[in-house]
Amino acid sequence: MKLETVEDFLKKFDYSYEKRQNELIVDIDFSQKILIDFSNPDGVEMTNKLIGWNFLTGIIPSKIKNAIVINLIAGIITSLIISLYDTKSGLFFFLGFMLWLLVWFTFYYSQFDKLKQFLNNWKEEVQN
Image (cartoon, rainbow, N blue to C red; front, side, top):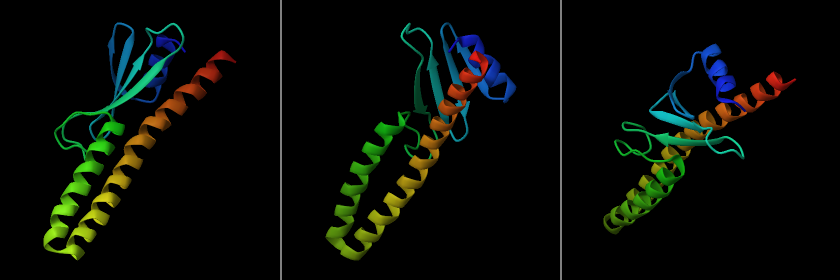
């Protein structure tokens, strides 16, 4: 996959992106950025990042997987503290928080995966 090919794809489908040397930074909805790095000769590397004011980390920038781990730990600790006062409320808080976490993780990860698959399919069409 070449930088120019990916750039053509992003322009064709109106993605907002920024070009830096051998990298493209694609802006996705709800404070998500995807970095496409072309500097590795073995292949293209794609990483994702949540920037400030997102639904998983709030104002803290983080990768999606790190956001899940941090939120899981924070949710468990908060639920345990609430459970010390009222077990039922602590359980409901935990279940609600985990549902929130699952929904937003699924949304952000599916956006990342969808772009990755579109680019791979686009690469195959251009090569044929």
